[in-house]
Length: 256
Image (cartoon, rainbow, N blue to C red; front, side, top):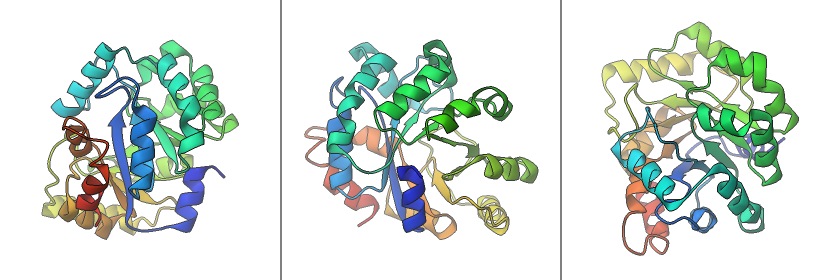
């Protein structure tokens, strides 16, 4: 079992994950931010690697990716930084990004490097499920990496069940089909979507993301899933003064 699997085996509700972009706001603070988040009580982390065309991301994360690239962040530099990760951070860590940089880097090489630095899973929103299953799944399995799939309100039941079969940590339940940074608006349709997924009694836990920006949204998400992911709201926080020192207060504003 990797750290992600151990986490979900030991804790089943009110899980909090935080996303941030590697290399933002400064090039060399990736592990500093991770360490501060663990000390503040976050359960697991998603570290994004920047890409020049982040189509699923809203303005906040797009800006962070642009700034990170301007700062010089690359996958090579990220993996070099993460060599310090497991000396300072013990909670599960996921890398999140788009498939094009991974293919350019080499999928097998990417998975080996991720495992060597202590990464536990990967989220690649634009990696087709068929390609993962037929071409790349062995690289993930051989390196004990969990591949995390996304589900939207439009995802058919058959596909959700297929995702559940292919998953071994959690399923990322998008609160809507919009881009990141949109506020969580729990309409009747969204409530029905959550309930539909709950009723399927999937073997993997579900974590809700997109639009979780405060305590109310976090609590609402946890009514329907095992936890929630905060992304854009934290990336905005990283644009403030003394962002490292004020991380504990930010985390308390989400989960007191």
